[in-house]
Length: 74
Image 1 (spheres, rainbow, N blue to C red):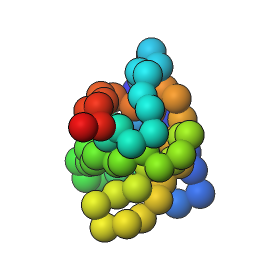
Image 2 (image 1 turned 180 degrees about the vertical axis):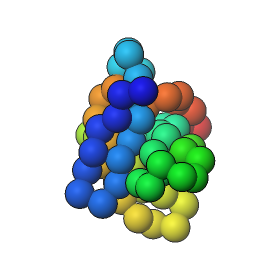
Image 3 (image 1 turned 135 degrees about the horizontal axis):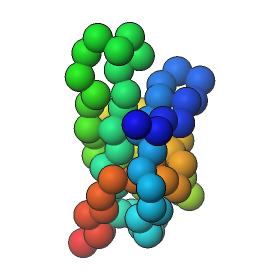
Image 4 (image 1 turned 45 degrees about the horizontal axis):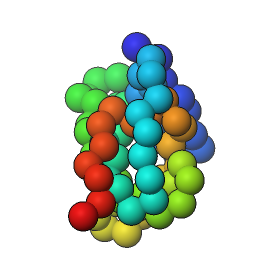
């Protein structure tokens, strides 16, 4: 499994980039830091290029290959 590390978290990387637009929801997989727990999928709302906001208002940067799936904005 390929990963991309950021300052306080690590995301799973996939082989292909999935296109998305600002306002879409993107699914990313947060990788367990200890390796003991399960990796955790989460949906982020894209607020600017490569930055998404979680349901509780935290912003996370993600690389173009860190997106697993996209739900288009309505």
